[in-house]
Image (cartoon, rainbow, N blue to C red):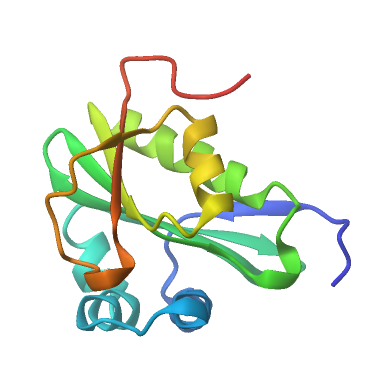
Length: 164
């Protein structure tokens, strides 16, 4: 894929649901199996994410969805960053940084105090991104993602959360 070109970050659009499903299914199945919670979230993000106060962002390049990230409402002060992935042929373009900035802005605009995420220690590039943005490892208190989620991290939004 052409590495040049403008990338825009857009909010949820029903026409992008098939891309949301396909991109996330692809990265999950690189190392794990799709869990029931994944299938629910990916098949119907309107019901499981948007209608519950969350948001799904899409990175668009040349009219094609190349990346996604979701902000799942956890409670009135917390969002979970989930379903963040970049198409394999578009990695290295800074798209994950653009999505992360948009997700953090969304949480701040919704008066969240904290963003949490669940990841896996094998996902080194993702972990580097989270560390860069100031996420800190905390106690894992969820089995939502089965064997795939072995690390929980949080970012408090009242601290400096973005890298200059």
